[in-house]
Image 1: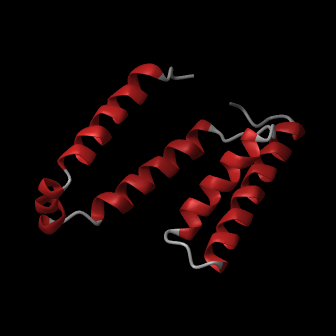
Image 2: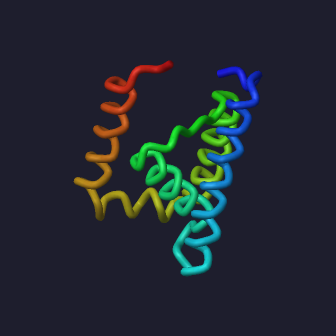
Length: 107
């Protein structure tokens, strides 16, 4: 997506504002990972309510990269050993990840 038109730039900033509001709200209530989950829930809710949201592919990819680094850095030997306690959950997570990659087309 190119951000050449004023409308696209407006939609981007509105999307970012909705996400920021959700992050602040979740943080105010002491929710875990408030700045990530609050933004995600707020933008998802706005989208479900019919609001048009935009995010340039480069920004999205950079955010996915940083999120992966963040979550990957928290995995240690104890985390891996605890996978045995949740075999169904780990299996379901793997299957859902593959399903998402196969079923949702890239744009």
